[in-house]
Length: 479
Image 1: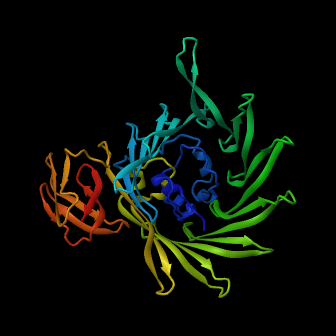
Image 2: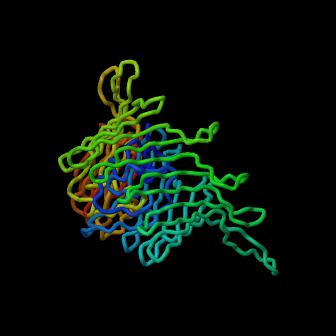
Image 3: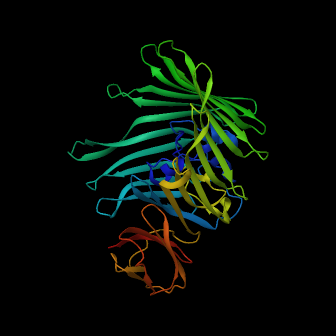
């Protein structure tokens, strides 16, 4: 099954979600221009709206909204069978995502920080540096650093991976030395579409830069990507050894029609067709179906994704089916449901850059995974749940509020909790979710209210307080 990790990678780095990128790409009105290096897989399906999407991330890093943003995405809580995590995002005064912090619930039931991502921009809102910090279990950090350079047109032309080493000077003092181990060079055509990405590594013996891998791209006269290839450097023959290739065809308003994948046969040395996606659209050119075929002397259908939308054209459901080769029938396997709040359009929301702006036509509140019960013939909630929290644009927008602002006690609790705040605040809304992400309680509250939660079973819960200024989240334990 095709895995689209874009949103969940963005939310909690290692969660996987199967919603297909081609539909999500159609959900955004702003033109997305990303800020990080092209992912290791191509995303041609996103060309429905933005034909060179994988390459636009080498341009300006900030989406240019046509409306004045009113709210910003502050945090998310993400539930899966593997772990519970949350992400917190911060922004600079120009609306650029300046940091992302990721936490998970450890074995003691306590939020533990796992990752910190930091982003730095120039006066043109272009990403110029990025720091990734992995928090180890012993509290130490393992860090990775990148720097980026651009040409006069704003195209990213160089990405450098940095590490810091130490040398001793003549006085016996240790000096921090910045060194580069890997770099990627980008080349473009006159239309600023990327032609190639070449990755180099530095030889430890000679210090020379050595070819590692190549991605190259070809376009038709309309600017549609029609071929992308990946190659590794053959040191023996001093040439590029192409390992796989994607080819694309289009129809109508330059909508992607097919994506054919070929892989190198190491025996014959030739690129041979392996698989293909075929896309279908409605009269307004919204994706309604995508079918996956495998080549076995002929094209054999294997999987299918069906897309449903609400009346405002928000993606409402994606259903994945596989073909029963015995009965010849399509069988339900998995489904994702998306819940939107249509009060805010995508252009009125600041969304962290991390490659997910195409998910939003309106304010996205929840994503829920379902699996198909063959015996009962119905869907049941399972796997991933993602909840999204926002705040007004004129606030600092952290989902963690100091204890001297909000106090919830007792915690752990048995029957009741009391919520107080040192500041004056009127009526707010308290939402409580269980560990699967299911909402189990929603109440209007005021300062000092005693809230009856005796109906809850013992266990860990997560609360969300929505007031007029911010969104506040935290953990509750009933015992």
